[in-house]
Length: 177
Image 1 (cartoon, rainbow, N blue to C red):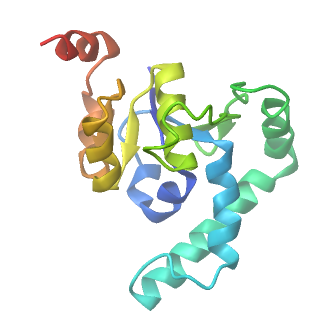
Image 2 (image 1 turned 30 degrees about the horizontal axis):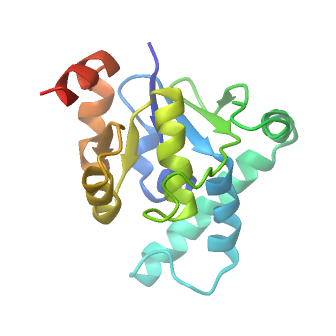
């Protein structure tokens, strides 16, 4: 069974180990995070602190953009953009990794506490009942403070999340404690 995670597209480019999981995974990407890749690729702001790492990650961002711009993948993505919360058909990267693009819509429910991309990530996680994968401690802390009912894994726990994880039913029963 494929493990699903809601994640920002740039994290897939930044953390190469995400693309070599021990089990099949499906990365659910809000469409707005794919659009952020273009800003990061063309922007003057470094993505990484180290210049060599920054150059490498920007190259990976370009590769990911090329993957999404492939005519076959682009057509699948465009279908998902026809309706709010529609999921694209799977975009297959390899035997173990696939992407699902979601036309997430920020409904301002959490807009005062989270930025628009964070809001789309958490709403996508809530709507699809899929755990979030993040490397941003501040975002994770805000999720806890706001008592947002989503399951979140730190990027450092990715291997655990893929191998064992916590099922949605386990998560629901833990929230009641």
